[in-house]
Image (cartoon, rainbow, N blue to C red; front, side, top):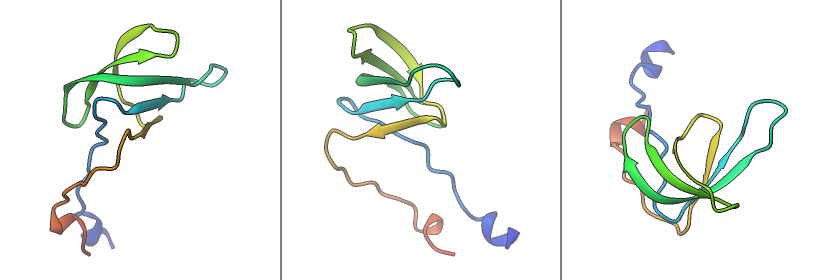
Length: 85
């Protein structure tokens, strides 16, 4: 089983301009919802310029507690070796 898992590839979360991010905060704090205004960098830790519902703007890094609601469906191309066992 570990030999199979070693062949898997991690696919980073990617948001696009116009998508919405739902960011869960630490315990006891409220979740934040923000609209992506600009993608500043890609890769494993993408940076986004976002606008919160109250009009406040910030630059954020998507964490594992961040979910994306896409503005419109898009096609994602995945390497065949990451799809098959």
